[in-house]
Length: 443
Image 1: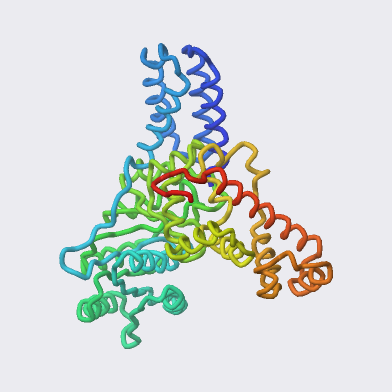
Image 2: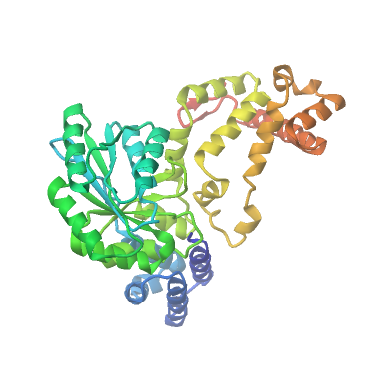
């Protein structure tokens, strides 16, 4: 989402770092570029004005102008102000001391609200909670069915009561059920509209009075830009929002909503949706997002993703096989599957410092289908071939190509890549032989 903004800001910072000494003229020119970059990203114009003024005021200080590294000082100022614009620090979900804690989810139709209910429920379940989902959108029968489907996919219980068509009564019964059964969280999916209307707001206000939610969360579509900010302001005025979940942050929008929504509404962004899968919901960290935008990376989020995707026993098993020089094509296939669990290759690159997003990011784009093709080729081999690729002669390569629906050239390429990977692992093992790194000793 932030590709264009990232490219502009990174170029500005790079140009400033290239100057041995900064003058007021340099800073004035940089501020003009930053102003244009933020406006083009659809950031609210008042926020752009205030942001530029704060950066300019700090950048013109004597400590910066007389510093031996003035460009780096300005880069730090831009990062600090960007973090502040995004909310300063990450905000935790609140829970009631007396369960169940009610999370009331609001939003316009099409914002991804129902899917986000499932994502949030799955996230809570993975973090030790026992959530119950309920849809009180009695106006759209498909809404109830949709939440049922999502609940099954996420392996979460969904409350339904066909004996009532009243949203308030349905919510009341769901709360009683959650309390009696022992669920500690009730996530309420409310009705949405194509636009703000009085009927919608009145129903939400009544639900809020009845349920007394500990969190009232707005699900906002980041692709709608400043419209998302406007609707967030109205929802906050009527409901007193405690947080926002921005969806479709993986899209091609300019990102202005994410940069504007906290300052305009005073409501923190608590989660962001980064794709359609139920696993693709992340807690929002302003510091990490600022690092991504400025090309400084987000290694902490990458580590968290890896910890979720990679099982400790599997990692130890792989390390033991590498030490015995017994790395096989089956292990290679398992690593491809782990990479897919982490998300798209582009997302992973975007979390690495000095890589994402680069001005030449297009050259780094990886066709995700290639990972599927590689796995198909390996699956078309016999167990013996996967364990000992040296026996794969010409006729075997032809058979594997036909079985996987790929070409012989692709099979040859995979075998070559695997051979190079084994040589690289062997070389690294030799380099670190007898040395200790990060508490691990290499024999």
